[in-house]
Image 1 (cartoon, rainbow, N blue to C red):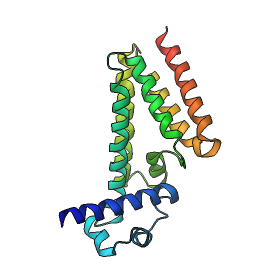
Image 2 (image 1 turned 180 degrees about the vertical axis):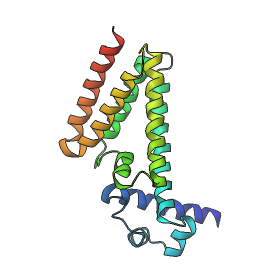
Image 3 (image 1 turned 60 degrees about the horizontal axis):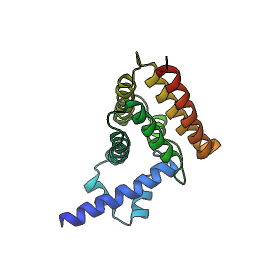
Length: 189
């Protein structure tokens, strides 16, 4: 029975994730999630007492998945912080070139909720974690302050924001080029 609950929970989360990302979090109602997932409303509410709980689970799952990818990219170049930064940028570029890119899950969620909403806390937590990683790597690579890390974060967010509009290839290629220029500017002084 526990396995059935887990699979029903995951089915709900998978369907909600796809709908939230493709149609917008606020635009997708519980009824649509129930319809597409094929579970009852009672089952959905047993696993997620509110839509906010489902949204939080969606964002937490996306964050965990991204951090596995980021950590794998960075750990492949242990001992070379500069290469770790490039590996992280390349990892983000891979996300940009996935079919159906609609921007960053967290930037999209940020646009839909006010600062007082608990969902914003998760968005800020994810963004701060990425900023902290960039700060650590850039300092280990020789940056004198957080300027390079902040500029890389800005370029990353810009690439995610523009990918659905100008195309992932353009955004991804410019992400790599601008990041390389910034890294050279700050670390080759």
